[in-house]
Length: 132
Image (cartoon, rainbow, N blue to C red; front, side, top):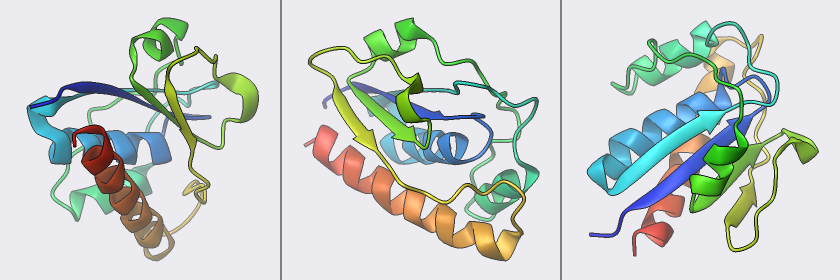
């Protein structure tokens, strides 16, 4: 089975990228190594994102926002950005995608669920493609 490393990046590494990382770990299992980071990491995860993922049976509550590291970009086969603009270093030969997703910050659970579901579908498509 193929093994790939995926890096998920958003500004605060507190919502979108953490949800995507949670899905990638769960759906990809031991076939993927998952990294995440932010250009300006927040102090803690978005509690609504944590609650939305818990509804899916995925616990991301122990995750901590991390600073995006150039070495993480270098180590990744695919780099998925979510609204971080030009903050991500670019290395030739990497797969880059920018996912336009609504930021869940400050939104209620009813507003975060569709964002979560969109992320899940995108992660599944990404894994299907990378692991084919």
